[in-house]
Length: 345
Image (cartoon, rainbow, N blue to C red):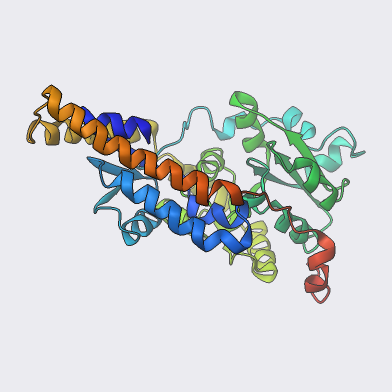
């Protein structure tokens, strides 16, 4: 925000790209009695800065529509990000990586690990990712399945006890070629988060030829067709999740072929070309506007925009920061009764 104040003072065009759904996260990271207040404060702060942008970007049409609904000047452009289809590739499937994904504590033979359906989840382990829902899903799916969770974060040690150690392995952080190999070595990618504005992990899995089973969200509308690239479930609906997994396990080969073909349509080259055109548009808009930068105007704008920045920081420190907390994931004992009547696969 401070950089934005300086840019406006010096009449430098601003391209602002919004990637995180902070509005959603506030319900997780702010005390419940202050959520409405902090959300209003945050929206005001965001609006005060994004109205000064030459061009506003985000990564999904769903979130672009939401931003416009909250007062951000139209249009909010959708920057269609891409995936490295050379790195994330079905050819990286590896028996060695697959065995590693079962962990050292599990006493499976290689023949068993080859026959067990392996689900993969990749992401930062934090409350908003809804990992605990997967612990309930595991109770509804066949015993001949296994879940590998790749990633790390502040709630790993809190979440681990919620999962049966004989059916789940917390791998920890992976990157680069090892992560690409893990995607390709799994049978399905499963994800319960509904807070993504885009969700790069979906495209990485699809580029690896790994069908996606996930909670339905607006971000998937950009590149995913239910029944063609995997299956979606209604958020927080255990029956819907079970049915999505059941459907996906019936059509693995068909889904795998489609996911790879779809991901190839979303390259980094096309994403870079789009962004290049956006920057040129911002430069052209500046060239067509008043670019008077005499010392008096610069000083006046610096005071004006600097004052707005100070007000926004004051609001954040006074009406947001004091209410910050981190919610613990829901434990099984709190919601177990909701699942007692659930039938098994």
